[in-house]
Image 1 (cartoon, rainbow, N blue to C red):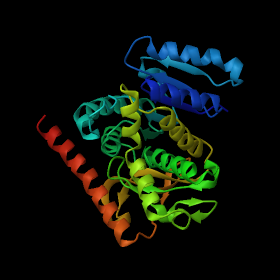
Image 2: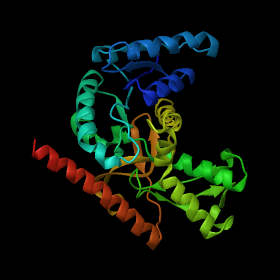
Image 3: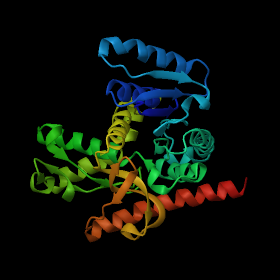
Amino acid sequence: MPRPQVTVIGAGNVGASVAQRVAEGNLADVVLIDIVEGLPQGKALDLAEAAPVVGHDMKVTGTNDYADTAGSDIIVVTSGLARQPGMSRDDLLAKNAGIVRSVVQQSAAQSPGAIIIVVTNPLDAMCHVALEASGFSSERVIGMAGVLDSARFRSFIAEELGVSVSSTHAFVLGGHGDTMVPLPRYSTAGGVPITELMDAQRIEALVDRTRNGGAEIVALLKTGSAYYAPAASVTQMVDSILNDRNEILPCATYLNGEYGVDGLFVGVPVKLGRAGITQVLEIELADAERAAFDRSTASVRELVEAMARMAAQG
């Protein structure tokens, strides 16, 4: 039986890190593709030469030709411009929409049965581009945001409480950006809600840091943006899909009336398996949480509408 294959579009820091984690995790063969000649080939060769040391037999291929990606089980879209200091995710909208549309059309044509994981920002809006460009059903187009945002929240909770990150659990809903909605009531350490373990002021500081987690790293790096944690988050999703784990993960998914939202990609908890998203889990939101979620949803809708206006203007 042939091994699963994952196509990673974009051989920058995020894409190369995804390729490394997927291959070294023995999850799948990887095809790394980029528009820049030599870049994916060089990184793939470097990763292949690490295999004897790490101890895996996954094949890592670098290419500039979409024909080499044919028959992939998963397509990970990381290509696009990275956010620079002072640049909002919204600033990236028009340029990255064009890039995502092009790469998804080309890769989906080669792998019509694949599941697409979108990483490019602004993420929720790019999911709409990928859905339209691929022609896939909505359960097979998924945004990686909530897994990353929840991981950031979990790391901050563990640091604050002085506990293992493995003891923490966190949920972050809404759009991937400044309006995301971390939910302290549903976030736990050792199964105990963090609302029982720290005061409201400390929790709010962690929530605020989570919302600005990406910007904090951008400001520190000066050039470029986060890639280790985003790549780890993508890899968890790839693992859940290829191994049909049906993990419940917060992902950007196309809502059809759930949470009172229709026709929009928003981050919510989903069940993720071999067929993609098999279930959207609706959790009870308090009034303040619902208001924050609605604000976040509204900001995503504004982005999508702005994108539609740009497209109409040609």
